View 1 (cartoon, rainbow, N blue to C red):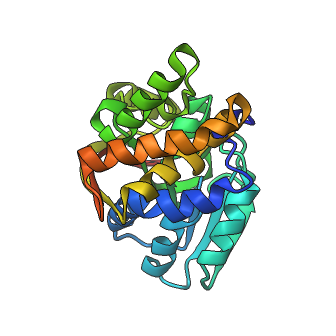
View 2 (view 1 turned 30 degrees about the vertical axis):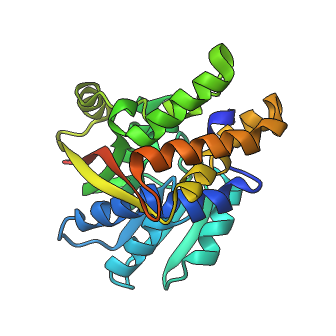
Length: 270
């Protein structure tokens, strides 16, 4: 899991949190936490916590007596998360989704916001979730719907394609690659989950300006690495094109865009 697709390091995490955080992840963090079942929870695990957008709502929502462990593969993302989220009975840990460093049946609740798409072996990841859940435990997750239904990034990819043609950075496709919910349901069953539901959730993403959206999309994810390797001198003109195109289609001060994602809830029956 060390490919460039998950290389959220260096300056990327801060830009990711500052610009993409409020635009993309804040609405779904609140949504995901609102779906936590009202059952007894003494321990909770968050996987792929990123810069802690969902972690904050989890810590605020769950009683302080509940032990919350927030994990991510990228130490630099966790460094940002630790600065922005402080709470009682909260711990942070670098962890690989495919090899969770926890005992079987450790958690009543496992939460993952927009992390499954980056895992190369999704069945193994789901099996790991099932393994660390206690009987009657709940798994809450979300994944983006297809790229075309999240038009801000679709337009961004079109701009990259125009600039680079056949050699355009393709990272934007990765977050939107897990949109087949029939396949997802089958994977859940193979992992051991017997009772699951997946629903479509539509939200509105809002950010102060088209310029901020452009910066987030070009400097707040691994596209920044790809651009730096290809031709770092092109970044200013590319950012200007993003800003101009976004302002024309989505407005400016603020920019508003429709978002679409799948939200799943599954139970470990035994």
